[in-house]
Length: 473
Ligand code: ARG
Image 1 (tube, rainbow, N blue to C red):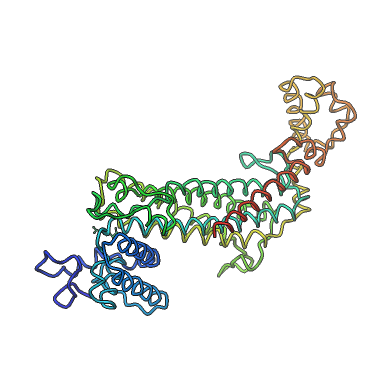
Image 2: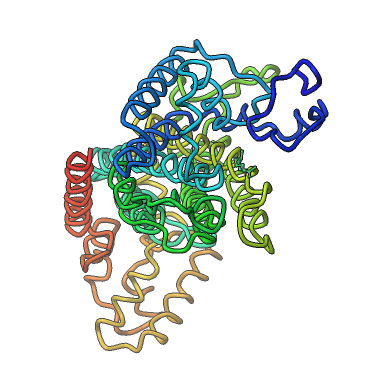
């Protein structure tokens, strides 16, 4: 496709004598990317044409021809019957040109009181709104999987780490609910950005507003926007909602990467806490014994590009003068990719999490290794009035002794405990994994009773969201 003599006359070509250079045509075209906006573009055009007729700017007959023509074009595109061509630049010009072919003269009135600058900003906001709804739904699926996992593994114990060194045992359910809590914040972030995102740019025209008696509030209502943008320059220049979507998505991908990293670690022979299901692992072409956690690794790896695309969106806007500049065309491909990547990663994790097989026996056995109950021994002394620092030192000495003698803390006799601190009594020997867990019963702790309350609260929160989402739909 060239812009040479063979190409059709541009919709914007009135002041041009010569055809567009073929290189320029290829370089500036965005149709391969922005064709994804066709539904939003047509919805916005229908609302615009409806408003123009209500305001007596175009006739009802022209409106009817435009609305019917646009609906038919939407069906053609959806059915794959639409010809996309590089010499029609972008989705807006494609649809307008197709409309002219289909309905003739009335098509020429659609672009009254509007510019591609407020048009594209409107389309992209509509698209972002739908994307955020889809992300919220996929987030709910993964959160649901984590809640079911927490329920199923209510009694499973795992060693807990700080600095990736054995620290304190926790319930696996508590660990899963920690990841759910992060994803619940991702959902909240998406919802909070909605008020800023759901604002109508259309009516700003190219940058200064339009000289027709338009009714922007009507268009906003038709398209489900909560408000109209109140400054025409800002309306066409603002892509904060793109940056905010990238930022929220990048943080969500970072959360997924932390879950993924733990699946990678826990499925190693060294940790041995989880077995990967065959359906979610891949083999090696040379090492017959291998079963690799590629799904988790790819989720971890894909977080990099979403973070990169957040930086791209910020850099795109940095120092860009008001208002619209063609640079802004570069906002779309990374945004689409970020949303696609996040949705795919959420979907695969929501399928992987329920398929993980945890080694409950090994979890329980390794949970107390590495002196993981040392804090409980120190707490024992502190409860008997020993200053915590003194208790810490005494138990530290016991740990050092055990290490020297290659023994574990629970093998120490009462006499040996008392040699480290005289406040130890016989009941200190009763400290074990279950008492350690049960003692952490304040809100937010890992005691089975506290985790059961945490799970119930998370379930209620998710159920309320599902209900609210159903009401909006
Ligand atoms: N394809 C363009 C974009 O995505 C649409 C707006 C073009 N506006 C213009 N004045 N050339 O930004």
